[in-house]
Each structure stands twice: as structure tokens, then as C-alpha cells.
Length: 350
Image: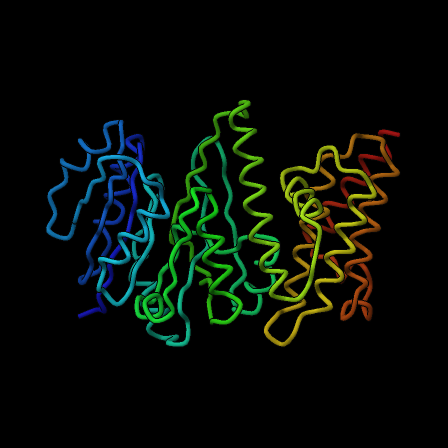
């Protein structure tokens, strides 16, 4: 028999896609699975949908009021005694063979305490996929300024959760996963496997004023996590600069060349404090993020800002160990092609 697994899924007003999410888990070809679903005080038809499912593997719990995802997940983890815990979200789809693939990886790599997978996007007309860094060193490096473990793809080794007392921090923000990963990744082995095991749904309803407020609050939460990670590396940085970095990842509108230069300086300085636990080569992917997202906000014909951002990318990539090869070889291929295409556009628009 396969090792025991419990899939843990919190639900809050998830009626729109809940049936599809449930079926995708219950259809897994895995013979030793439990499926724990916690209805966190939903006020829509989620409860009714859950009551229609009859499966001995399915355990449904309900809250009389909404307490939030972090507390709900901690409650579920405390009740689970299976060898592995797999996360799932109410609007995503687990692909066939997901559990077999993820458990097989963990069984073959006993030093790994948790792992995730790559994802493919669905919903709101969005297409594409994300390939996350695979090794502990690469994840650790990129986690400094970006969350690179997708929450609903994660599998935990339950014994590790209990041994080290890892829990989600119940502060009510939306980065409970990033906070937990930042606690685990610096000192333990983690991984992302190359398989796509999950269809990750993007819900896009436009940027309302309330959404803008929530987006800023999320940026503050992310910056707090990043500041904590950097303190553990004995690197101090201004909170304002971390917030500007978050603005850059969302398009960079309003950032000046001076802001880009300050962010570049921060990236270069961070790489200088890396030890053998970090992968400097994968860290350069963060630099490509700076350029790829920053150039989106440059108005056509603004050569000064365009050239300034490109020079920032050169500065990062010229930092050792990349100084021994040409700029084209140092810059990831997708970024180089993007720069070349944008350069042509700017030349024609002058």
C-alpha cells in the first residue's frame, strides 16, 4: 500500500469552482488517501455542494464563522496523522496522477521536508505556465524577493511539521504561505519538481478602489517577510525600498531611474552575502524580473529611462561570476530577445 496522504483544502465562499476542485482530488489514482475539507464559515452555496458528495475518503468540517485561511489550515494540520499532507485550493484543479507523482518524489528524497510543483494557469482568459526553481539552493536564493513555491501544489512531510513546530502565522494577511516558507527554506531542504500537477485559477475582476487597498496591504505584508529574510542574512534594507520593489513587480509605474538604480544596488549587495547554501546563477533570474517588468512602464520614446533600466541589468549581470562572458550570454535568452524587440520599437518611435 502507498504511504498515507491527507489532502487539506479550506473553503470560503468557493461555490463557483468547488465541484471541479473536489472531483479532481477524488479522482486521483491513489489508494491510501484522505481528503479533509474545512468549510470556513461560507455564506454562499459551498456547504450545499459539499453535502452532495458521498465518499468514505472525504471528511468535511465546518466553522460557524469565518476565521481565515491560516487558522483553518493550522486546525486541519493538527488533526492529520498521515505521513504526508498535500495542499489544495477551492478553485484549482489537481491533474491526474498528482498524488502519485508528488509522494513518489518525497519517498525517493527523504531529506526533503516539503516540495511544490510547476503550474499551468486557467481562468479570466489567462494562459501560460510558471516554471519554478527546482533545487533548495535556487529556491532559497529566489525566495529572497519573490515567493517561488506555489501554495496549493505543496506536499509536507508531516513528521517535519510536528518536529519543528511549523505553523502558519495567523495574522490575517494574505501571505501566510510566504511567511511559512521563509521560516523553512533557510535551513532545510526543499524542492519543486518539474511536473505540472495543478491548474491554477486566476480570478481577475478589475482593480477597484478596495482592490487597490488590498493590493497595497499585501505589498506591505510581502515587504515585511522579505525584510525578515534579509535580516537573517545580516543585510539591512529600507522598508520603503522593498515596497518600491513590489511596485516594480506589478509593472513599475511611477518609479524613477533613481529608484531602479537603488533596487539594482540592493540586488548586487545581497548577492555578496550569499554562502554555499545559495545559488548565485539562479539569482540572476531576479534581475531579469527587474528589466522585464520595469520596461513595461516605460513610455514610448523615453530613451533615457529605457537605456537606464538596461544599464541597471548590465550592472547586475556584470557582477561576478558573470563578468567573464559577454552581455548576451549573461542575460537569459527571453530577456535578451525582449530587450532587442523593445529597442527596435523605441528607435522607430523616436
